[in-house]
Length: 135
Image 1 (cartoon, rainbow, N blue to C red):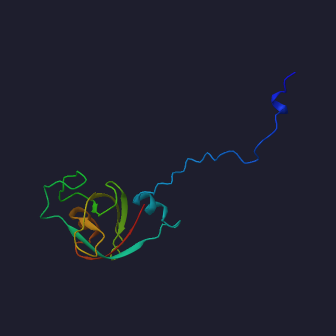
Image 2: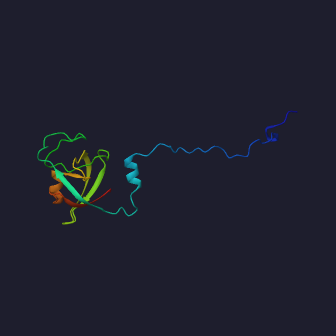
Image 3: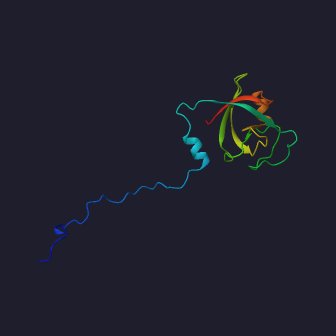
């Protein structure tokens, strides 16, 4: 009588191969930023935020929006189009959550450019300090 399956000797004591689906590829910048957020999602202060608009009204933004006086959005060099960011004017407490709608600013040392509509809403139509965070 031939030996059955239960009588076969085990040849290896190693555990089964891992079935993890985790990729070794680097994560995108947006995912790194999202995972870097603190649990409290604290406000960050940027002391050099500017705004833009009047010379560009009527043109298309890099993300495909028509830039108008009423468009509330923000320009950022590397965040994906449509990424939501919340801004608060520390001078008056006004807060707005807006998408990234354009690329820029193109001035060294600046991270954000507010559209004309957002700067009027926040009362921040100058270059200066503003609080921001991811919602």
